[in-house]
Image (cartoon, rainbow, N blue to C red; front, side, top):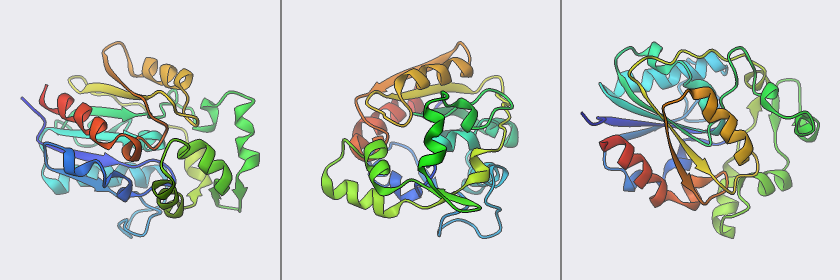
Length: 235
């Protein structure tokens, strides 16, 4: 039995509009959510990892999906590690696209090698929010995109709450939910060596796909990404 709808979850600093290039190519009804911290997000949700997770669960219920495919990009993966338990029996597929998967009880920062962890010192930090400096964001997130697309994505990036990256995660994978991971082989912020570690944490039965793209794969390879998701949804 195929999936009956797709919920698309953006990563940190992006918004739901990042999925716009992918949506026209999907073969099922789909909705892209805005996680708390974005203008389009529901105002009654806290900007926290719990708020993120609750927003994704709400989308599955609101759309009425009974066999949803939940697709999470990058740090959006932190919000879906227990999605099947939040909406029992309503998630058929969980797909990570360059998704970050800390170990149980780890935070995002814990996943970084010690030298790379110095990224903390390269972000412009206030008391509550962080944002990548534009030059660093260009290098890490959009290096393989055309200039106009690059500018659009960089202009849409938003600050992220530091507390989100410092919150331990909980894994609650439910038996029967199919797991998949889409690798972005030219990714600079979630490099392939990290992606391989994250796949291993999902278990032994993960379907894998590889796209020749940097981190913003929805802009670099929208049709190819949609093709992968369609194959998974109709398998």
